[in-house]
Length: 309
Image 1 (cartoon, rainbow, N blue to C red):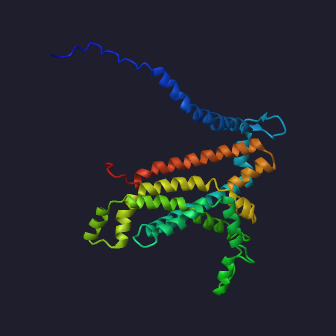
Image 2 (image 1 turned 60 degrees about the vertical axis):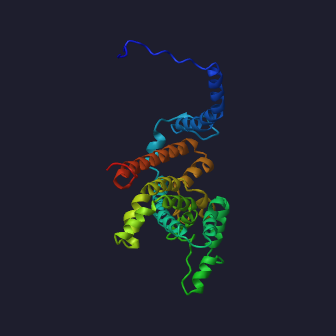
Image 3 (image 1 turned 45 degrees about the vertical axis):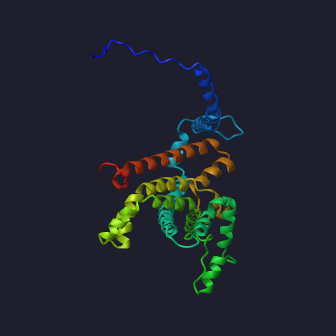
């Protein structure tokens, strides 16, 4: 007998403790929600307003509309220079960190003795504080008594004024940032361990050499991991600040004058909080646009297992 469509299903009865459980659930998530509102969304809305004002901390904010943004994009040459430095650093860092991270991760997935020791050693940069790491690298790069230049002279090579020359200072910071990218290596190790062994074995049976197996099997299967590391690497490169602040102070000749260092000086040295807030929102927009472009390009080169092509 066919069911009558007009018949309504009986409403399920609520548990006697429904409202008590609901209130308890909201109370549990309340600290997180309040934290987001007070410490994240609140400051974001405040900075959005201050970016439209002439705000010097000691004075009352004066609304100026989009004047800060117009001046940044059309008149401020230092802003353009800091943005250029950050872009050049980001390109070198993202490419270098992916190559080095993947190479080390490949070595760390080999079946050799003492593998856990090597994994621990490569994880050490994560637990070293950023300030301590910057001080250490500043000593290593010292042209008078630094061990890096000492090693170069011992093998007959000329010394390099790593942090004192505009030609090498930015590259020196790239090397340091790549060294500190242990998270990238760890993520690649996890990605490599998820590649099915049968795919590699099938490639061996078909006569593929090690390079062909790496290029046609490992890289496509690892592309989601590469995608994740590239996105996080770009975001991290635009947030680079501590090493430049401690090691070079933006020099020499502003060759390491990063966007965040410029923002820091505008806000806390010159007390131009409204101007700095507008810089922060431009940086936010740049990161959003670049992330969206990478996401839009992902169908062309990112392979997801089981996804129809």
